[in-house]
Length: 208
Image (cartoon, rainbow, N blue to C red; front, side):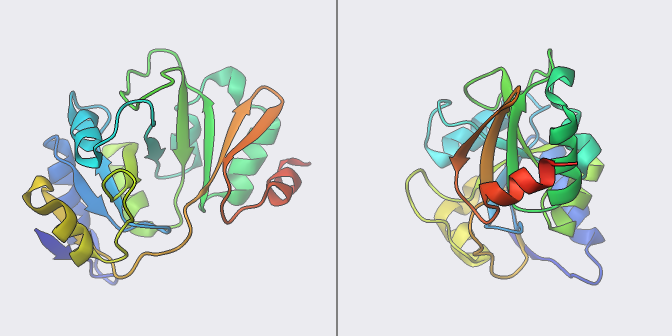
């Protein structure tokens, strides 16, 4: 089912997504980069359904989209929250940056491997942040079958997955480059995927 998002009055779309996610369903959402498949990692088997829809195994982990910096960094182990990480989060979120950090012990999310890290992002998309504020962090991956392109439209996403999706929120065309993905371990930084935010900008944001 495709539901149009009224940008002036998005509460209806938010409530539809919240209901589906809390029911353990996988939904498609517009983001600031591409359309994503979303599930609640706090519900047993919900992310397994997402992996099955993607047609890929747990060796390719799923990132988590969050309402704000506090929600995102709350998923990371306290030892990972250095001053540099906090400055980067405060200065570059919301935006197309995913930080892969050691996860807080006992988190319990089934996001793929490795199980001791978590990729977190605060997207520059008010609808997604509103949904995450209502239900908590959302496990999200691009809305495509594994190794196939992601449609830039809600209609294309719906055609790809059909009745396998409980809901597709239509937020218009989404075709920005995927987020930059950076793994942070102690003082070591590694770019796992290049994207809109270059390493130089990341380094500058980390400085006092």
